[in-house]
Amino acid sequence: VDSTGTVHISYYDASHYVLKYAHGNLDTWTTRVIDSTNSVGEFNSIVVDADDKVHITYKDDTSDTLKYATNEDGSWQMSVIAEDMSEGNSLGIDSNGMLFTAFVKSDYALYVMLKSNNSWTEEKVADVAGRSLDTANEYGLRIMVTYVDTIAQRLKVAVRGTDGEWQTSLV
Image (cartoon, rainbow, N blue to C red; front, side):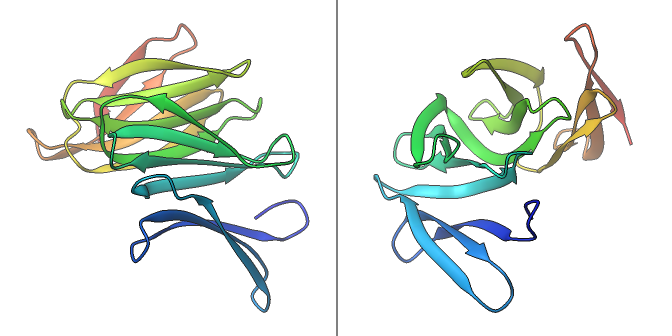
């Protein structure tokens, strides 16, 4: 939901293998295709920033990449931000406007991409995340990711310290 009360939704259209976007209120909706290249849109996640600009991360299933779409410049732009994506994706934005998204690569490790000054940086968070990534949230001034360690079969929390190091703990 943006500052005017408009609801923003991203979703995967499985009939057409495309990423779609809808915005509106409970009575009136506008929908559009954001990306129709190959088979795209699974594991999508959306945030709206303080300027009411929309940011979406999602999987390109054909190339196993994590893609990013935004309308922050007034028109929709798409780019690949990570290779070798497997599953899961949870996009967040911190109080300073920095975007971050957590996802799982084909090695089943948990990674986070951080956007700063229009470039993305990849950080490995944990060796075993399996397929059960849940959320990415800001905790104070730090990023927090919750996930299920599929080896231990336990819920874990990873928090990025102010020094940039990730620390994990069992819940």
